Length: 114
Image (tube, rainbow, N blue to C red; front, side, top):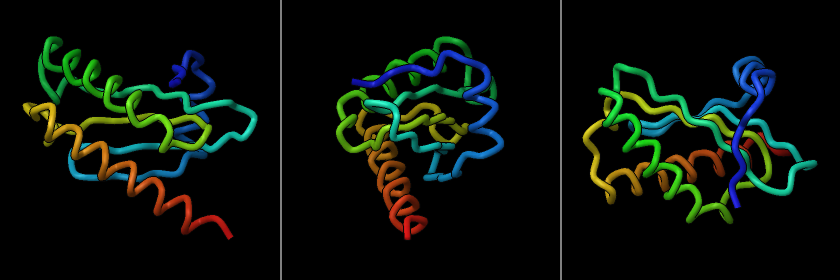
């Protein structure tokens, strides 16, 4: 089960203290938090990605893709961003980008953990 980020202070903490990871077309700022039961995700999709219809399509698809992969994410706060490179991506292409991003997140977490 994926939660949402609902408070401004979490977004602020993510921008100041978060660990940044990127993969072609997607990026993530994350803060692990063992007090949470699951991952909480917010999405940042700017106008440069496309019109409202395109941005909303991508957001819906990302929600579904991350929900189906929720077991791969450690409890914490995740801000997922989309760059214009990801606009126009098919479901399969976006799924591959999400898988690549999750792999980068895992590598970064494992590398920074002593």
